[in-house]
Image (cartoon, rainbow over all chains, first blue to last red; front, side, top):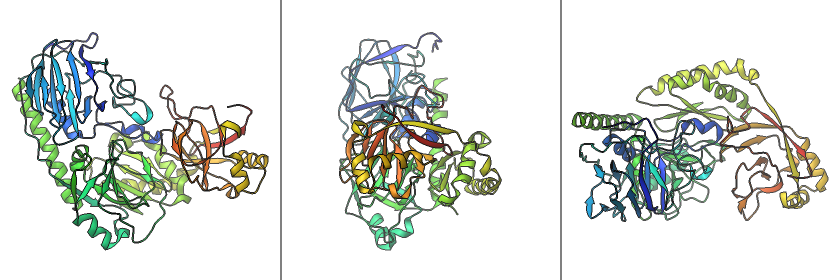
Amino acid sequence: MTKMKSAPPLILRVEKAGLQSTVQDLGRPQGASWGLPVGGAADALALQVANLLLGNPHDAAALEITLGGFRAQFAHTSSFALSGADCEARLDGRRLLPNAVYRGVKGQVLSLGSPQQGARSYLSLPGGIDVPELWGSRSTLLAAALGGLAGRALQKGDQLCAGWRDQSRPAIAIAMPERGNLLRFIAGPQWAQLGSEGQKRLTQQSWKIDIQSNRMALKLNGGLLQMEIPIEMASHAVLAGTVQLPHGGQPMILLSDAQVTGGYPVIAQIIQADLWRLGQLRAGDAVYLQQIDQPAALAALAQQQAWLQRIEAMIARQSR
Amino acid sequence: MIYPLGETALVLQAGAGEQARLIAIARQQAQGVAERGYQLILGVGNLTVRFNPLQQSADEVLAWLQQQWEHSAQTRDDVASTQHQIGVCYGGEAGPDLADVAAHCAMSVSQLIEAHSSAVYEVLCIGFLPGFPYLAGLPANLATPRRAEPRVRVPAGSVGIGGAQTGIYPCESPGGWQLIGRTGLALFDCRANPPCRLQAGDRVRFVPQERV
């Protein structure tokens, strides 16, 4: 492995950018006092796996590709990793599975088709994708046209540079946890005011992801809910995974690019360990919501962190 | 009152009358907040602390927050408040709803401009859009309901009234507020440090001017 301190190596030339491909890392929490959404990968677990596979810092910047349809040519030979939704990726003719490390040779073409399941795929390069850091993050924030590559989604002709050169990573593949269709939540501050009827409906029926969903929010179809006790809310912090009930009655789950503050009742908060699942949901997918308590949410989070640490240790052993 | 928002955040709900104390806590970001890995998000009458629950227990954070709240009773008056004069071109293309708002408030256009520009506004917090200030202090007789049909494009710098609030759109966005004028002042600029011109606790006055 050669780590160069000179100019960042050009690795990929984008031939087809797809619906929405953006550079993302784990987000920009320090921008909250300026009204900046935290942003970052919609599926932060897949992003971290893509990084760990290459021996990158877990929070390095990678490419988030929405619903596939991406194609790029290797300008230089390099290792790379794919994770997240399986888009029937191919390297020239060879079929690639997600959650594995590969080597692209100069001139070869990497192409992603459409995913059968899931919404977002992640492509990592050695040392992360080299774009300028802004306030502690390289995430693209489309709403404010900042971060990432010129503050925008990728376009045909864009060039992606890596943090360092590395052509010889061991070919490792890992098995991701089952995604399932269950989202676990902790009761939100206005859960009680939703009333027992609303609580029952939220948790006992399936909800379908609305077509009008994006990196800011997933809207849920399955009938309208009303607060039993209507409340006027002053603006307050909202987070990825916050479940709001706007006056219209259609529940929505906020995602990474959500505004820092909101004004609708918060009926639930999806647990941290399940946030990655939100990033893989797409229009028409059915989900169930299940209430759990704080200790169970913490246990799930600790378990997920331990899993990531095991992956990291396993990859470190194999790379020796 | 302090309550949890999921397993990674606690919310201190104090009420709008206690904003000065909340601002005093939020302004201490630099002092000990970063080392603990906390992130503070100020709302209107509330303050949220985000933390890593695998590193700190909610009980620890709760105790810290209670301590900050008690301490803020002394520090509330020490918050430095920058006064901003923001030049606004009222009416015309810059403020297409000025006449409608004046009619709704039963005053002349010049009375409306006079009333809006003589009040002193306080920045309660920044949110909704990057650099968007929640301003308190709109004279009650200027309150005007939002437009029935929101605009698809509100130009950056637009000054509007929405219900009992007034505000400035920092960037182009959709919006339903009544637009009474526009400022050429950039409220949010990626190249500036800090990028956000206003901060919670600052005071704002609008100064009528001929052009944007």
